[in-house]
Length: 289
Length: 102
Image 1 (tube, rainbow over the protein chains, first blue to last red):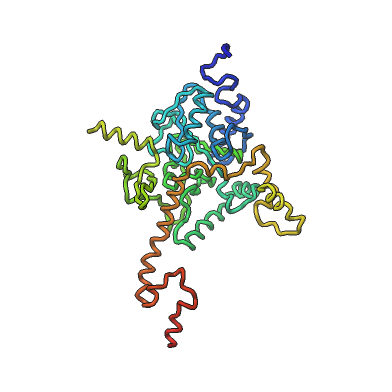
Image 2 (image 1 turned 60 degrees about the horizontal axis):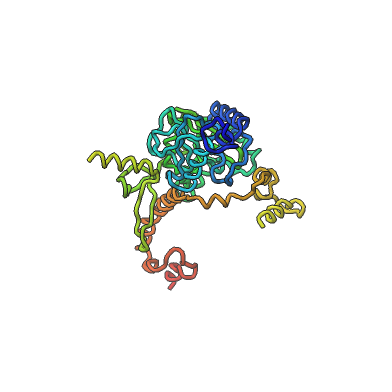
């Protein structure tokens, strides 16, 4: 134990939990994913010490790309202080000994569940998404061999039919999150359950975006500065959510707001879902005064 | 209990039933269950989902919005439709035809 040359305090574990061969295998899959934007690459998913659905895919990707100099930030639904985010951040602090942060601009690797940070990312950052269902066509076509053929042939008519049926039934495209996108004009991709509010941030983003699905053992990627278009129709263009209210804490009018019921009478408050963005704005306002 | 249901669903062929759901598709079931933990998708629902719910909430409000002015337009047309909400308008109650006859 004392002979361990490493600085992290999890003896008996390899750096960042996974063994080197597994990490190598995931990196190879990642290279393929980056080379074919939006294509779902199968990988040999390992069992992680937490249940599927809690970020096993994202964690394996993070483990594979993490280096000793990296600064890790983990968010869950935009927040740094929720159970999932705190646990994963502590997991990598212990097994890899990496520095962690809650500030978006300081992080080099950001693992996220269901949000893209409001603060613009730079081209030296990597965003890792936790993905529950990687296949955007799954709800239309349950067979994996069928969907793989559909992807291969670029046969995405059914997706447009689905969106059209929404318009015919409801007058709107009734998809509020996990809104399907077309990556680099080729593959239709599920951007993981981010609200469609975040979809425009995928387009031409300077950061590398990696998506990992642990249960389904699939990973895919959107390389930096890649065109990502949300599927829509000329007469029903894609539009993001907008609020009449502003954040009750920092006053932001252009961030994704969560609605909180604050009393028994149904009183509401709206606050930023991105806690770091909110805190940063607040401290700017305080120092500005 | 869940596994029993899946097991029964997979025997559709044996019982001469039509295969129509994903649980009856061997390939689909294997892909989702061939690992140590077939704990189920349900466990992740313990995690917070307020961002998704907020997005859905916004969508539901958008869908309702155009319906309201339409309903308001419809009201002046028939005086008795003021009381009858569209949900409890049974074919017997909604009686513009009857009244015309009377």
